[in-house]
Length: 147
Length: 314
Image 1 (cartoon, rainbow over the protein chains, first blue to last red):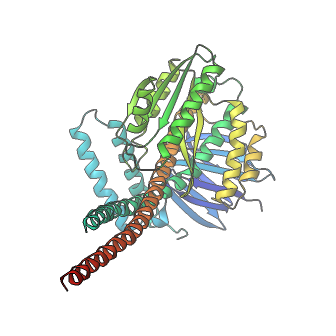
Image 2 (cartoon, one colour):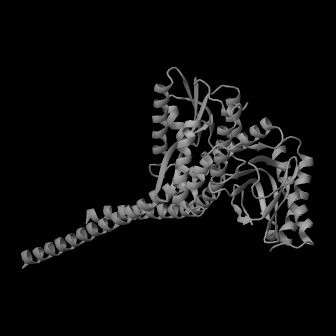
Image 3 (cartoon, helix red, strand yellow):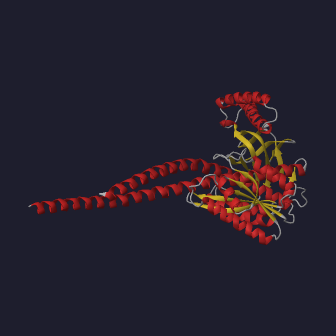
């Protein structure tokens, strides 16, 4: 069976580099699933979860903002590059980290009420990031996935 | 014994300087470690984003984004990244030299074009103020630990001015971090995304990727693959997508060169301070030898004086 090469990269580090069977991504226009031999594509990412399927196992990742590029490699394989502003594997999102993120979201929200315009953009981005982490961690808590 | 006191004082002061340079070396080494790991981590992202940006530029013929349109060059902007503090060897001098060379080339390439500068760091600012160049903006307080947020003012300033056609060509002079012992001053054009430079860029990236082995050394293959023309499917409004992409990528470029420069600065400082410490150690050794000789000469002279005195009494 054909596979696709998936790379998830953030400015801080390489989150995942693996050959997978398929991957679902949250784009700004809705969720899409990329299978091998997908046409070349460029799309913006929304926040949500990227789910790669490898050997029947789900590999979920929380992601907030960025874009993806799907293209054909030299030997005909399909490359999927995800350049995310923020991304994290759900397996690495521990309970403790989620608790911290929750506290942080509360904190940010309070700060946002006080400030009107100062750094608003930055705050919304931070808030979005922390909220996404919480949401995705909650979503995958009861499901099965590859740890 | 007049000379020995003087020498003793010098040995002591050199010892104090050695202590300071040693401490600075250790501080620089610790900072370097962090800066280097940051630079290496974001390199992959930056390379990928360049690749994507360039493949869009090549594949889509009529993009309405100014970042892809080459205009007649009337105004050139150079962003110069230097450090705030000295004592880092030839780091600032080298990047300053390459910036001066760039400006000279620009003068002959585009006769009549006006040249402006944005400086990051105090050293570059004072250098080009002395040379009487036109500095339009200066960012003197960039923290040691640069985050994406710190460079936002620079990237948005560049994007804004470029979109307003105040500048037709924007380049950055920075220092590429090769290894702790080797840093290479470099000039990179960030706007417009030109086709000619793109080709060179893809080659250098290919080289570097295989050199650094960030991922399995398949960089060359990838760089080649992206040269092929692909028709991309764009999700949503193509122009909106491209402009948001272009802005994000330009920001990333500025971030990346900033990280590279910081890593280079700290390693240049570490090496310079290590050399200074070694030199101080050698000097102390030399002076100790001179001191001991002077001391011995003094004792010998005293003894001969005493025995001469004894002889004359007897």
